[in-house]
Length: 417
Image: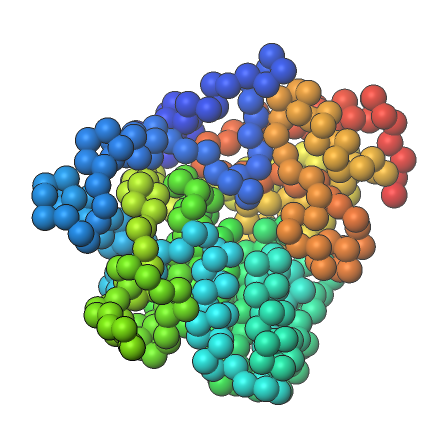
């Protein structure tokens, strides 16, 4: 792997990028949905299965001890990546969605009462809406949303007004998976804490791209997914302040999360294991650890700088096409935009756009992107196209995407919406 940021060298670590689609080189512009995996991660998972496949926390034999050590080490790497202080604050889940659901069911069930206000925002992924809807219904609480200003950023006047109602919890995306809007997590957390709210952050789109320091942010809980940051699917993180996790009861019972079990009652294991019932996603944790090591060696700061260059270039090229409408922060707000660009090609349905781009080997996403309220009620669209970038993308790939968009116009004709 390269010692400094060199996209050509980095691309050699990703076998899938040599794939051809419809006879043309794959141009993968859908990393907001899931990232591709370097050989270092693939080999780490394969090596576990080949040489030390065993359950953790159970065996006294060598390969079980090694599996346990590597799994715990991955938690230590995750804690370091987030500056969490200790791996005791790192609970492994299936993904960001699972982390938020665990938070809503465990902490929320105990702390939300009838009449309490749960506050989130209009730019959220469904995973940061539906769990709170379910909790609000169970507890007869009220769910409120912070609106958006100009369809780009949180409306801070609306936010302050809703904070005056003393919400019990404020849950928000560090980065919008559709708009690419970067929210000031530290500032929002401080304001929410001042009003007495517990803060839960969806970091699925932020953690792959920018440096995240949960202690500097000051949030109570932070959630992310391995598969969006070069690691395997099926494993994610719920970071929580230790004192909050200690005061929270587990909601899933079984093996590994217990200290003792009797017929009448049980006592729980120490953190973080009391929230991780049953056999863990061992290979997922080990692969996630390898992904964190890869990102650390390449440098998150270098990745962020390259992302910004790609974003600026793509916005410039898209802005040159009169029948393309880009949503969310534009090139003038580049410092507040990360990862994703939502757009539409005139009156052509995004599914047709994605299909034609695929014929040219270009992979983008199309639809409501699991953010239906944002896309339909705020953006006023039934669906949008989205291209998203990561450390292995190049400007030449953006050029190919632009050429493919122009092909949409040639094939279908385009009328401005």
